[in-house]
Image (cartoon, rainbow, N blue to C red; front, side):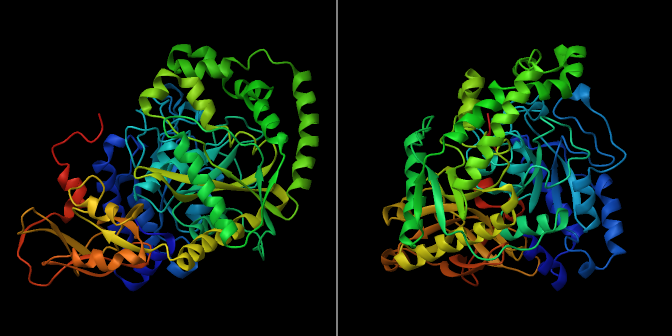
Length: 567
């Protein structure tokens, strides 16, 4: 799936139509059923009325005309059940939630409802009777939650953006673990009407995208505000950060150190600041009186249907049953002091933290549901209580199968600066890479991908995996008459999107890499779904072909046919 801008350009040129995109989306949802992304999946019957309405509207009058988006299933979409991942709780609303209504009025299409940790209680992605949501990059590992399905829908390229919610990190944690952007506006910045509450006073609707520009486009529709100018004068990092956990703890720690080193190489002041306020606020979220707010919203349902709520969810909610009102007032008064202190320390600065300090396998999350969940929120729990806006950005990788993300935070009154700071961060990262001679992107769609027989040729030359991407819908993929069988990527009028991988190859290694390219393959420019052009493997004209495998969506899907992708 393209970005918003690229998809609008494809519509304007006539290369694609909204109906084409919906057809591909329905097929993609079916192909990825094992990931448990959807509770209410996209279907023609539900979406035809939206397509009909688009035919009567002018594209230039609707900033999101024809753009499909997914909706976390605790946010109302008219005519689609809202379950909050609890079947007995389900109801079918007659009206859209306020955020959905604004997007629909802008021409966007709500295509389905995504899976979540039940009642948005969890950061893990495994707490749903509709199945555990698998990580987009490595299905044996957790996807993060509670907005798990929305993050994975974007990461797998099904939709350009998806709505989630964020109370303790639900719009940031799954973004980082699946390699996408997660934007959490300030508390109260986007309307919560039509959203099943988790902790009503600090709940936020959030959005997952694959570009900062798309996050800005959604923000402009839901809550337009003047664009901020300039950049922060420094980056603040909390001193003494030591929350690294799980089997890949060292990799996460090193990835964050690399991110900060790149900023310093670019001349950005990186300042360590003592911020005990963050830990104190984090502790209040589940150890303080705010857990009582969750019980106030959902306690009556839990007491009436104890057997229909997952045990882990019920235990968390019931822990708020006996809190005292005096505890709440004491905590609120203390929070005012903490907020003022943090605002002063971040004056003119942006706070940067790892989004998560590690990850877990799904087996580990099942065996230790409370400890693993709490660890994932170590760097996110504080934000809403301290009224910080946050944006999680992909920032390299821990290893071939694990993305790494950082989150940028600013106080709520400076929310408009956040997206500007995010663009600044992305631009800096690209500039540093270009100036350092670290390498250039190469696209591979066959035997050079991870886990494939020729992948070692890239690794041996020092290439680093960047991520999974897709071509523009202008290609077909064929099996070639070679030994071993290789795929050939060909540009075609009747093309489709094809999955590929992006690797960053050191410039010094390019001559050696070019020598390894053999007929009938060649290196040429490939147009990606997001509008970029990169160098990659293409097929020479006239090469003998065995079979058209475009319908699989990529070589890996063909390679794995007949195998169980997820146990």
